[in-house]
Image (cartoon, rainbow, N blue to C red; front, top):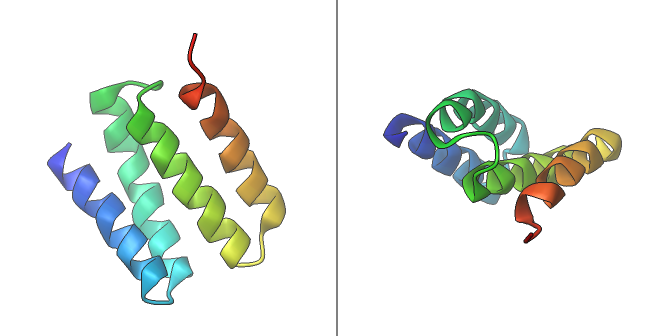
Length: 79
């Protein structure tokens, strides 16, 4: 999970540095490892989905961004 977490952090940093396209690539690379280690319903998966949603919106892909944000929502709901 350390590698996947590092990939996720590089992705977020890329967005903050003005390069959301690179950030998306790192987040997409992190997601399978995070899911494998943490499971499909872990809050970190939701965070990754939310970041991917924001990145897609930043890159002019609001439809794809919304899909990621909608995927994150059930992971964040209690109960």
